[in-house]
Image (cartoon, rainbow, N blue to C red; front, side, top):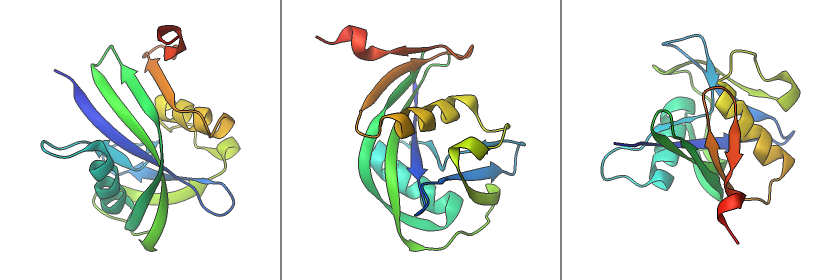
Length: 145
């Protein structure tokens, strides 16, 4: 049985990306998480962004789907824009901060860094990718005409 996740790329006016430093482990990650039963991925990303950052966001764009065949897990990625609220520490995030891509902390989840990188390199492309634990990524373009 697959799990489904939904994660946000949220940028500030400088183009820096918002990351949360988790309380339960020493890692940084994008705002987002598991889609709950009866919830759509687009509703989940808005809920998760609010829970993890304090920001109310709207989805600007669907960015892609990332399959993690070894887990099995599917992750939806969205570009989101804050519309209200303020950054607030909470039970999930002990630190919330914007980073330029070149300064993303080393303890950021590698798969998420790759997702952010794909968006920043080609912001107009919808990405469909298989991501493996060893860092390999297989782009889905081979499946389409």
